[in-house]
Image (cartoon, rainbow, N blue to C red; front, side):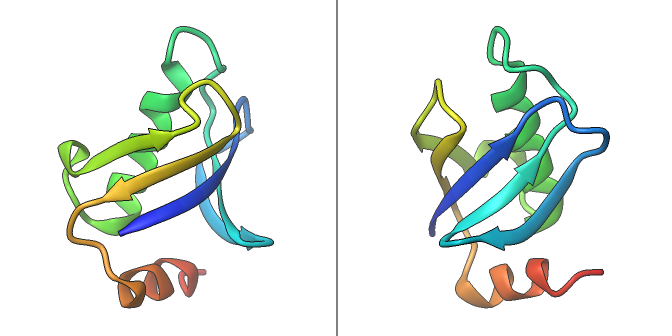
Length: 86
């Protein structure tokens, strides 16, 4: 499943959600330097979706805040579950 995300680097805490327009907001504490934020995004999404890090790939937007990620094994129902967490 491909998901468009909006990354918020240097956030005070890591969080996945809510939706911002048509993109999933992913806040990470890592700075956008040397791929640290990308690694943190993959880690946050893996934890939220309950998949291993290797199941997530950044398909588009490697160097920007707006990214498209592909999560192997994720379904729209899984996304709904992630968004419904408190």
